[in-house]
Length: 553
Image (cartoon, rainbow, N blue to C red; front, top):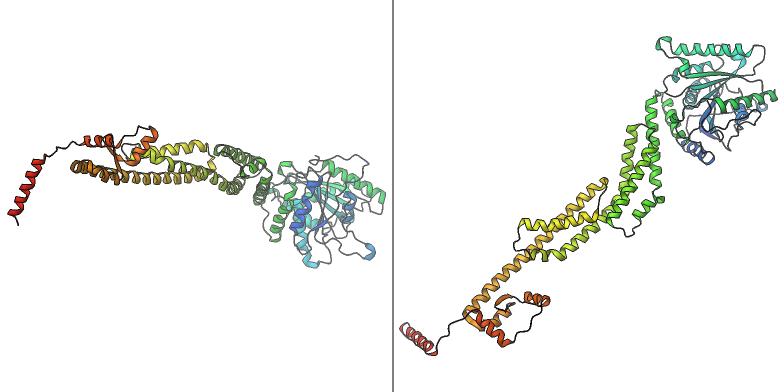
């Protein structure tokens, strides 16, 4: 099976060309350079459209066995190699990585095992780095000297045993292990050598996974054997390198694309795995999958949030340009639907619960940005209804013959209906904001109605009081009471006693002919006819009054 996004090599082509640069991913003391690794691998997107489907190839083996030299020959990388003229000592410390574009690959050069520099304590890092390489790699190259094949403790068998023990705990596509027999000679036929090595691999597997467990090596690992002559045989060594490079490009199993994480998450995945290995914790595939799902979903969420400023829909909503509330709500719903649909599509391959959890974070962040804008729009509409009510409620209530709870509710409901009609359909995410704003508007309208009702009731009571007073004055004083009545703010026209302003309002609506003062006086006199007292009778009454005064000094 070929690599995803591969370009197949033809026989005789040059080896795969690595992209410039290399970095130390894990230092010799175990420190992982996360930021550097993330930036380094992220650059694959610049060079390859297939960077989401990449292959990790790593190499382990004894120190000084030519691992770095072989990788440089295979991929044209620039890993440091042993300079025999300066002595045989450790060259690669920790784990270094390089990258290739076509096909998209990450190459890992791992520190050699069994080096005297680390001494007896060096086995810990050897085990950690071997397990790390196994967990991350699609193809694991094991460098082995031909002379060490039949040795009990040689040939990196100890590392292979650790790898076999941990491999069954990791849920992943098959790992391809290619044993590279270095300095191979033709004394022993290659077929026999391959058979012996595969039998030895099966023995190691059975030692850590007895048959009673029912775990077959073929379900987890695919073993291949490749022979390499001594590098002094330059022409033959180069040809073998080209053959292996072609094999890696065309036939190495990198796992199905849906199970691979994008290159941008390589550093994060590496950090999780390395941290667990260093803490000697069990490599739980389920936990790792969950952590990666959280990381990738969060990454997609952040990318969506960062894209808002370039989104025409978002700019339209936040530009502050005049837009009706109905249109704003329509545009808002379309924008939210597009954002959340995009997120669901991009995270569909990940754990459902994790995806939903991070989606809630996306919703929260999105609504946090848009709620103030929506609130301002609704508040403006609410203010418009408030101003309209202030202008109209007095007139509406004043036209009512009776001010009761039902009539007042009708007035309030009329404005609330107008508000709902102008706002249009509101997205469910903003229902709480709308509910709060409607409640505030309703309370405002109730307060306005209450204030205007109080004014109208006070005015009506004042009018009744003044009308009653004017009527009594006319009854006892006749036309002489008219000036007093006018001073109190009332007037008499056509036999009707009303406040002056009401007459003025009526005159503005339907102008009448002015009434001469004498005619007005006659009309006023006709309102309450009063018996005229004859002079003689009036005189007699005065005499009687004087007599009464004499009787009662």
